[in-house]
Length: 482
Image (cartoon, rainbow, N blue to C red; front, side, top):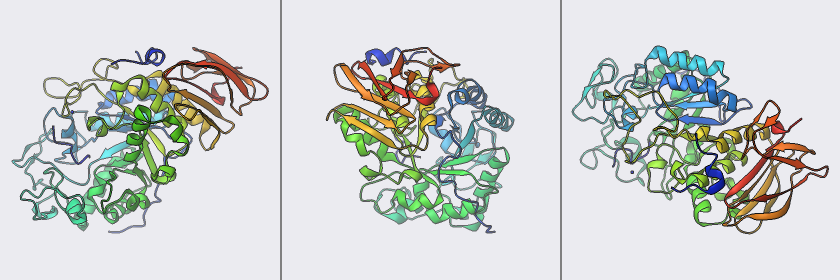
């Protein structure tokens, strides 16, 4: 959860635009990176469970996504804003996105499609409704009283700032013991609270869930998260939301012992480079820029919080340049990438398409739902990521400005031209075996055929091509024609 969650937020580039349409126990081992050969995560933000289930079979599995991240599934406060899902009132698996049975069916359907499921888990706090009320599934609650779950003694009362809200992010105690925009802050150092939170996560594990995104992790000491993780019934992938703040005492590095950590600097740095600097600067992008070590870094061009911020990241509204930035992320071997899939919004608080009772409607892509994970440039580059997993970068080229190229050694090759004009008559050394390759930026490789341009790599590993402005070419061994 972003610290500002509750405070009140085209022209496509020519060639790319055409592609965008339609008691303590022994801790389980930390899973510090997504397991298996398919590591790309699709964040289907605020999709309901039947829609996620359908998408796993129709798109995520076939396109090679390894994981789907789903929004918080527990009972929450009533309302139509997106952030109501981040205000739990109980741990019943019943929300505006569906019932427990629908959730279980979704997990099973995704597994059948070869896609693992990550749940966005809200364990730092409960609701922010001072007057209390009745939750989505009928549970009554007050700000610091949740019958049968928590009572007043289970929360922090930091005694600062009048309303107990966090004000000073340079004060570690305040950040981890005061309330994040009035959200009732759980006493995660308490054995009872830890056991209750672990029970919720274990219930999700019993339904087949494979991992958790731990919301608002920065607002809990890393040791508290470690203790809760130690109570899990089996191993699970863990990624923690810890927003970097320059000069702040709480840093993302503190949390790497528990699993992956979101690297929020990645998306902002990438946006700045694509918008106003030079792609040539990306030659050492990642750890060379002071980001987290690659093995514990979870990266994204944007997520549901940052796309509602002050314009510091690229979003679906940036169209062609957004597609290129995602193509770079999926081609570059740093961190574990998450692709955002959002709905259209015009105000910061706007919730997803819903019926009159705020129940989330089934997803209809490109009609209120942006479905960036389906954009051909992005979806096809997931296959590139899978084909090149475990390989390094070689054959780097740049023109000192906005034309770059590099190999994923022996497995793939990409060149991006973000100049204002075409790059014509140039040859590129790929290091790939000779053959005919589908350019997956512009075509889909299926059953040995390519729906777009075919690039011929010669016996010495070279090909020649013209690349229009703000465009790219990408090749990989798994899209090589017979």
